[in-house]
Image (cartoon, rainbow, N blue to C red; front, side, top):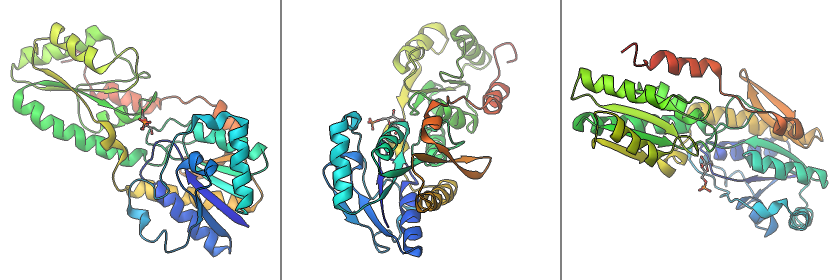
Length: 328
Ligand code: F6P
């Protein structure tokens, strides 16, 4: 048997651990393992090469992905996928592990339908995949966000400013929510955890009225049509005593980098091992996830039909920790 592996979509810390686990598990079982470079784009361009134990030596501690990554919207087209299948067959690859987000799962499903068994692993910092409690890279990213918020706090405090910090997350607010809860900020606003603007202004006003040197931190998630960074900065300037002392900053791509934390490493390794086991059992069209600390797998069709909801327990923490204006 010959198994291929690719990483697709935005890279995430821990992808290398999944690759490491797949290569090592294959080796243990006498299976040849092949790396596909640059995601589905590399699959279509036949950028495929054997992966040896030496190739993965030491990668478990490194951020990014040694296989590199790409986005290929054209993979939706059957002719493009046909080329991918031809390349897999020409390289004698029977089955594939795909590490990526929802879009990558769809590609894995389509390839399975075309006769190549595929297993999806949730590799994205965004934590926006419904079929797992956590995605590979999410916790490393929250630590980076935490660090970012703390750095911004130092300057906000020194200048008595209100600074609005925008996190990544695509359409999912978990990165903002977890980062904000772990850093003692004044407010967090995401699609799933909106707050009334008047309440936000009242909260910031009260804080500044109590202490004219007070600083404030507001964390928001990206891609929220109801709350965008520059708009919010302007509104806080106009509606609170912070006036011109308001700034906005986006944490940007630093959030995708960094060496994976222990949780991401172990979870990615557990998932990588399971992916190979499922392929050996002849299964395809499935994705692996973590549920209540157990490694599980679901049919990809079922997984893609699930809607992701914010964990109510986590959202509740934000409400408990961040006082509203009446309580201040
Ligand atoms: O990988 C997910 C993600 O980092 C999102 O959080 C972000 O919105 C997006 O990717 C950025 O994509 P790109 O790298 O294509 O600009």
